[in-house]
Amino acid sequence: MTAVVPTPSKSGVIYPSSDKEPVAETYDHLYVILITLEVLRQYLLNRQATVLANQFLYYAEGFPKLRVAPDVMVIYDVEPGGRDHYKIWEEKQVPKVIFEITSKSTQDEDKNTKKNLYEALEVQEYWLFDPKGEWIKEKLQGYRLQGDSYESITDYQSESLQLRLAVEGKLIGFYRLDNGQKLLVPDELAEALKEAEKQAEQERQRTSKLESLLARYKERFGELPEE
Image (cartoon, helix red, strand yellow):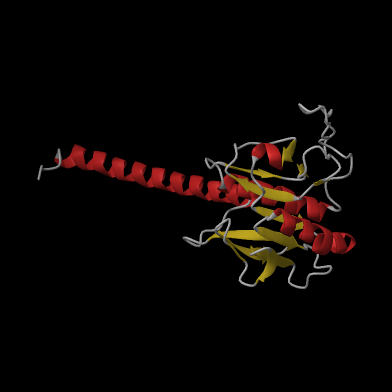
């Protein structure tokens, strides 16, 4: 996490925004975090929601050591935009969905400590993604809050996000439930833009040819008859 000079709250308690620990264990884990953050951020543009990655989530006022830094968390009904850290008691909203990009070394914490904490905080959905398949055979594992406890999500559908999740190599693919459309990652967006520009150029050339043919027709036969 990027080092940020801590500032005291109104009560004088300091809530740091950094622990000076690395953001992710490996390049693969970091890449998943950044892509998931950007894809969901784009998806929720113009909504009263924010998507944060590796920011401290403080859940007990006055106790700055009671914190966790989810890899990616989605919070609804709050001001859009980034935060240096997130305090539940100030924003008055608990994250709806949390993603942890897990590995063999973080397995116990992710499937026990964090799972129990998110369950107690009433985070509606908790997703674990193991990009290297080190301990989750299918790489993706989801939980949804039913009553006061988590139950496994078997269809890979996120009710909170209204998206279907899919394992796509070392990334999570996201598909809208309403129309099946995929949320494109930055590389795919760039390719789609390139293809759109290519099609636009082809259409421009086609229009230019039609205009040229029409001009030659007018030179030879005069104006086209009106209907």
